[in-house]
Amino acid sequence: MVPKSRSIIKPKLNSPFNIDFNWWKQHDRDWRVYLRSFLCEEHQRVFEALGSDEVIDWVDPKTAEIKQVDGLQHILITHCAKQEGFFSRNMALVDSVFRVFLSNGNKPLTPQELGEMLNRPPETILKTFSGLRVYKGIRPVSGS
Image (cartoon, rainbow, N blue to C red; front, side):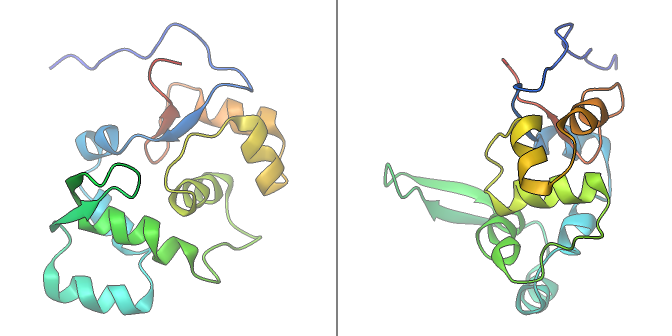
């Protein structure tokens, strides 16, 4: 299988990024184990009993459409990432950016916005996430 090439267009400070869960699923066998490490204490117990590959029904609050979503990703984004102590000032850049995307529902953000939120140089964020290596599935939003 030939890996897909990355876009020829180089991302800029105003290019949106987010976590590409599909990329992550294809490139890291242990991605669910890693996500489980972010669960709050309450949900660690719940997912211990359920397993981490549960699919749940979710009602879109805007359209009222019922969709099946990954239960682990959903509870992590909607609950655990909102808990006090989810962020630490001493975190590595990649971990901090990953947690920002979890806490904001994985809505795309630019390196400029991430830099302001994390008090880090946007240029460093751009350089880290626009290179050949993909960290934790964080990539430019396709089509940008």
